[in-house]
Length: 128
Image (tube, rainbow, N blue to C red):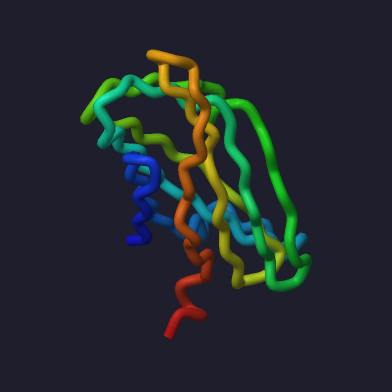
């Protein structure tokens, strides 16, 4: 399980291949990922934005920016965790994702970046 800690926030990622969601007519492969965000700091923080770098071995790099995650901008007290599940469709059987969150300390509204560790998106039958 990929894990990264930056600016006192721990990010853990688990991935799952969604073979029941495969669209064989278009060659798409659907992956789900579960992210756990742990606030290891002494401050209350809020997740404002996200940035993803998605690499599909056929299509190359695409970047996605947006507000919050899964429609939310969670606020985490010290030692609190927030978990969400999202997904990514790839044309190929191989890819990877990485990125960062823009967070804000609630006490002084200072913004900071938290890195999301790179994680692989590989169809299980190709992962020998």
